[in-house]
Length: 397
View 1: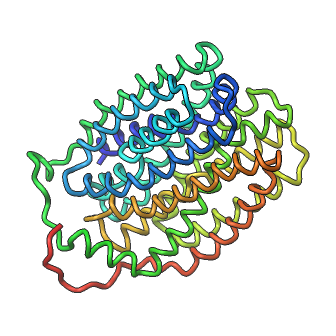
View 2: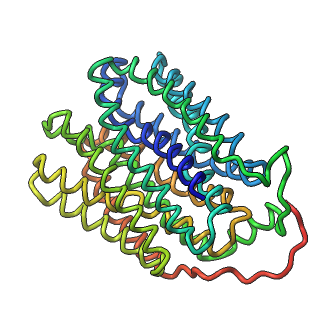
């Protein structure tokens, strides 16, 4: 268990840490290339959508053949995508590298695949806690990597900084050796009582699965809009560049505590109530942030509060999926839930750029984020967390 947690957490730290800093490149790249913010936002929106869609198939492959091969392949794609991102001469090429290639890479090096390994190797009594540990590691990656990325941009320039990050992504490969599972050794496929199609049919006809997907859509919308566009929002209000870097780092730091606590509480409290509280609290935090005078202090307080709520939805959501449906197809089902998250991410990051270009302001997207948080708080409350009742099925995966 500890080997799985250590290696899985380290992979998530690096993979999520790199992607959380992409907002720092918005202004340097658009100014250097003479692109609009929508050009950049569209590429990152495609990245999030690709990440979510590819996560379904990465999850299927990891469930069937083991996570090791998926992680190694996607680590190589991550490196190629970051280096390609540095030398993209057109918005279309930038979308292909920063959007499609990195999106596929993230699908195989982040939560869906890593949580599948954790689910198969950690007992149900500790599963929510273990997922909280892995999510906290991803948050620590944001705290560690975002200031590092800001430093690299300021000292090396945005292009060379991306090249160094690409090389750093290859560190995922040796870590993947710690996630090789004996049951998949030699290409063996563990026996399962459900086929993939039956597992999908069961999940998508189960109302609680649909509600979890709806809530996760909102999570994606809020966090990716804020993560990508807040640096530019602060610059538009004449804040110094280091305020944005510190703000994103604070989100990562407090997210370490938020995700760990959410995972731990998920062992003792109803996860649906935890999720509802998180979404509603996000809306309250955004309202207070918009009402308060905008100062570095108000930005830091908002970042700390949002950080505490940032990815704290991840452990309870994935733990509920495992609790309802079991772990045999956890990576795949987690991938479908995450795809909903990434559709929300696509909308959040794209609408942020589009509505800014149309109105000269991010106000409308802030208001949408508030309304969606209240909606997500409501849809999570009816979720049933008990294991689904099923008969004996003989089909194999």
